[in-house]
Image (cartoon, rainbow, N blue to C red; front, side, top):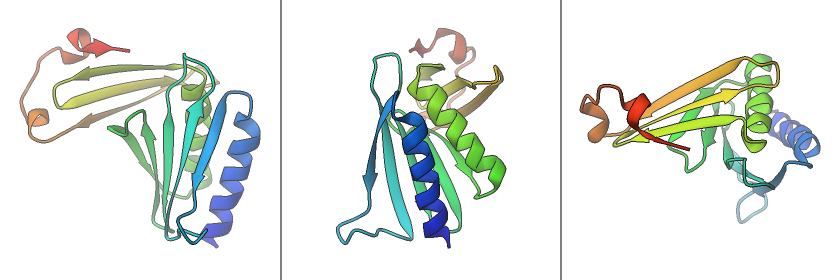
Length: 141
């Protein structure tokens, strides 16, 4: 059942993103990689950023930004599936901002409706060290 949902999500993303991104699906060496599968979205213009979507069976969807340091951990709810569609399109079309500092990354995405979603990820060990104001002075892309 999840395999059908995964296939439907990727078909929908592939058709809706054909003008802004190339979709690279990894179905594993046997052509079927469940329970874990990954698909990457490579923007077709310079303003966009690569996204990866990983399905961990019926458990969750992991949506990762760029090199994978920033991510959203999502469920298979209709709301989260729509979130995936909106974020992937927005990021691939260049509607995102990123700030990096040692051991941390913050991403802000402007969705098609004008609202924004954010995620911050902290990495061991430097993410444990306080860096006041890092979102102001960190490397912005």
